[in-house]
Picture 1 (cartoon, rainbow, N blue to C red):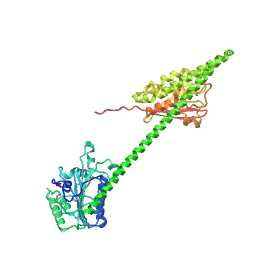
Picture 2: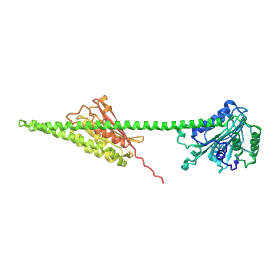
Picture 3: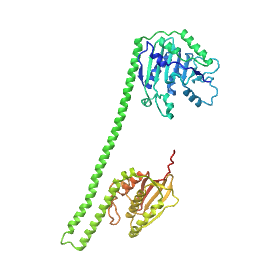
Length: 508
């Protein structure tokens, strides 16, 4: 059974009030751990017999150096580990299958029971009272013939959400984690009188089973008198070294944050430069695209004013004007659709749509155009397909652009059909035609703005080159995708994946 310890004075306050105590150090958990490990390293490397009283943050990383010392055969004269009740409860829950806590475990921590005294090298786990002033302190007390010392730190109280309460008493030693941890107010004294007072101030047990341990502490203090190896000069020298290490760590942390910020700003700057460059290219391309039909129209109008122009030629130029007007209208409409996409995406609310409510209507609209060209148009959309997540206007535009493309590039006698099926968390919508196909080297570019496939069936009006770009952007905004397979002379297959609509359950 784990023993409770009566309330005791704060070790931090006791050392702070000591006449020989140096000034408090404000250091990071990283520096505190480094200093603690340095003291333990001396004991390990020199194999110095000593008694140790310690209260450490939770985590195996804090226990490594102490475990090294404990494992030295016949060296450790006594190791006493103080723990908060919450820490002890956590460890008990993790080892609930071990009903007996009094047995010896290699390298482990034992708790006190009404059993005979354990071997001196066996670490003894002592649970503090819930209201103990030591609950917010960490310390390492060393008493040996060679040297003695006390390292004690106090952590400030932090208000955190209840789910994160356990994080308050845990310091992760890695720099990335501790940079966000609060600093510790720390005292280091390598002086016999202060160390003795700190050990004597440790709480006396309210459990009779621990009275023998208190007696052992007093006997060890009386029997072993440390050599006063350290002087105020050496102590101040060590403290200055700790301060310098802390300053270097803080500077390194500051510089790392500055470097991370600089890298972030550089990435943002590169993105902005790239966006500006793309915008400039877009504006330049738009200007060229608008200029081309205007130039053709201006030339046709000039020729129409010729008095010697014959009727067939006049009709040809009139047809050319109509064609270029249609091209200009298509270009402007596509540009407006493309430019308004981002604004629409910010304001739009994704809806649950059934393909059967959209696809048949669009197909019937394009049926006369297909019949006029001599192209067979059909669709297969099962009624049981789940609803997809998209906007009504977006889905219509996607189907319109892909159907128009299929009919446009399919010669007379060909076929265009639409098929739909479910594929995992998506609805698979396929647009297949028996058209002229797309050259392999052009497939990666067909979704680029203003890109047009070079081959056009019969004398079809050359489009704006934005239809597939608009389709791709619409699908990106609704979480879908589009891909294409094509072979010259055999046709193309555009595959659209539309996400299935999922109902979001709101919780109180």
